[in-house]
Image (cartoon, rainbow, N blue to C red):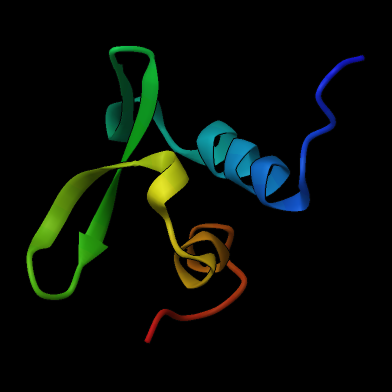
Length: 65
């Protein structure tokens, strides 16, 4: 039986699709995206480590706190 994607996985896939190629990449098969982290600036982070607020922000659904 095939793995059924969760809502979170679908939203992460949507973030990945919307992100320009200049702002995403793969390291050892894991997907990474550039995001702004208030305490550190722009960072490359694993896509699956984004918080729900960060996902919403990336999808244009709201602001991060």
